[in-house]
Image 1 (cartoon, rainbow, N blue to C red):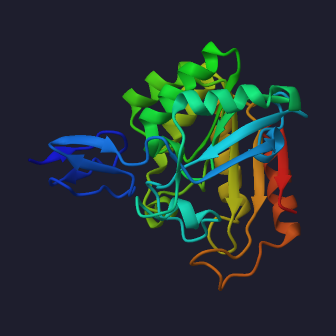
Image 2 (image 1 turned 45 degrees about the vertical axis):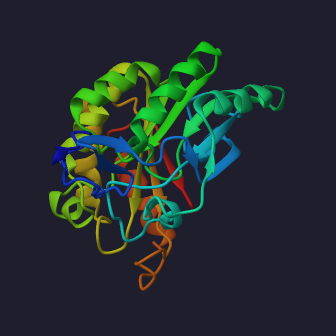
Length: 274
């Protein structure tokens, strides 16, 4: 029996036993199930600034958790070892209850909650949702680091559980997003909705020869300012990774120049990886 996954714009139509484009959701008995529920690949206590979040509880630490799978296929992915793989990857089991217990144990070290990050957390939507409910009950915060590629209905349902979100806005042209397997308008909608619900910051990785023009950065920052000029933007430097190791790193001067262009319309612009 076929089943359609309605989590993102791909709307994968899957035969029995087939796995979707994200490698983390599959048809089992005519129902879409998350293959990565409670299976984690990474767990670390990180500075909040590493997410990156610069204007949300600065100086604090947060327990960061990742699983496997992603619904994009960015050739420059720095976490391809977990994002670009499926259920065959090495994981360890961690129920929502166990994750929250670990977060609480780390409170005396400065932990303020849980960050869902490293791979694309939204492809494990059910685990993220269940953990987030328990984190709030424990009096701690939820942070999500995401590509923002999610359908409107599940996104609206999840946002009340999030205290802060960083969304990757990978560029500002449909052509670039199509090459990454994504959809610009979907991400723009996710950003606009998140800005209404929680603390939001946005990150753009500048890839040489792809999204590094001042014209594109002005278009991107101008649109972001139309949502709110108070949204922090992180302009980040590319380094050769994954299937894009033939490119040089982004020149530092390019990052600074594009950040300065973004500051024409946005109040808070930060540079990263420089």
